[in-house]
Amino acid sequence: MHAERQANLGVALPGDQGAFGALTEPYRRELQVHCYRMLGSLVDAEDLVQETMLRAWKARRTYAGRAPLRAWLYRIATNACLDELASRPRRGLPASFFPPADPVQPVGQPLLDPIWLEPYPDALLPAAHPDVAARYDQRESIRLAFLVALQELPPRQRAILLLRDVLGWKATEVASLLDLSVSSVTTALYRARVTLSTGKWNEDRAARGAELGGASEKQLLERYVHAWETADIDGLTLLLKEDATFPMPPQASWYRGRAAIRAFVSGMILQGEARGRWRLVPTRANGRPAFGLYRKQEDRAQHAAFGIQVVTLEAGLVADATTFGFPELCRSFGLPDTVAG
Image 1: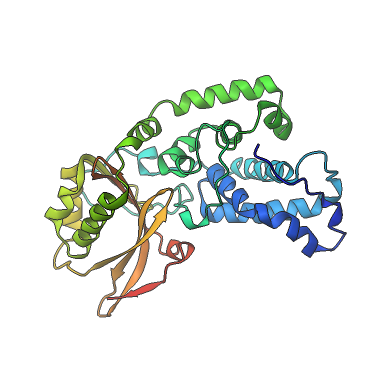
Image 2 (image 1 turned 180 degrees about the vertical axis):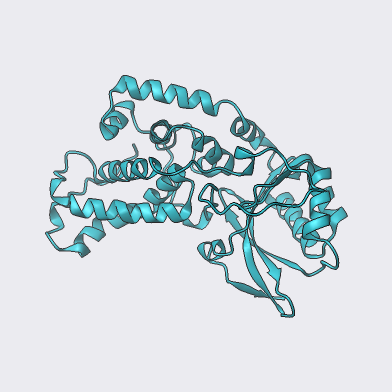
């Protein structure tokens, strides 16, 4: 664990929430990211951090300073998440649950059950604290592919992997936090690592060296935005990898391959006179380029919030464009409800 101050809750006198908040508030943002990784939902993570602070306030007299305050808060937050996960379905993206869709078939009704991962704004990430004991740095441990893989793990394995491989805690520290034996922690971590070593996350991690960055990425994204906003289907298609993917939660349908995405986009999203139908506002999510998507309102000059699209780039092309069709997400990213036409 990186160095931290040894704060004692004894200075937070009974009923003095101001003093208590001054001690605990510095940890709020990193606890929110931890809860997000556990739950896969920004909204749920915000709720669980509130629950963590409430539980900590109620238990403040039991804290004797034997463990760092940060570790004590993580213990409360992790157990709150485990309690929540006991009654919740796992979250994922459409490919977690369904095969690729046929682009010529109608899109079904959206699934509004709480089964979808939600994007996380990069702007809310806390300052990184590099730890040589951690396997994953903050940027890669917030990526959508990593989160999808995490949700495949049983909740306790998920917690152990996050504490060991993302936060860099020792096995003895994790065992103490979760009231487990060190051997149980070691076994669970091994199983979790085996699961993460296969599947899409492993492929995504291997592709990191093919990312662009700098001026090349900027130019590609500018071309991508121009293609969307001018309804240039040919131009958009040229920017896609041959095996690109296009998920759209809450729709269960998702599309794989340049030809399938082109057929769907031209037939459903950019059909008809679509120039100017969409506006894309740049942001960042899950360590990736992202956009606030805005759709033109009928007979109005404004475009209304549609959702957040997270874009993965590989080898100079778009490998994935995941569109989270939840308009309220734009507010979480500090974006407006409408933009001018």
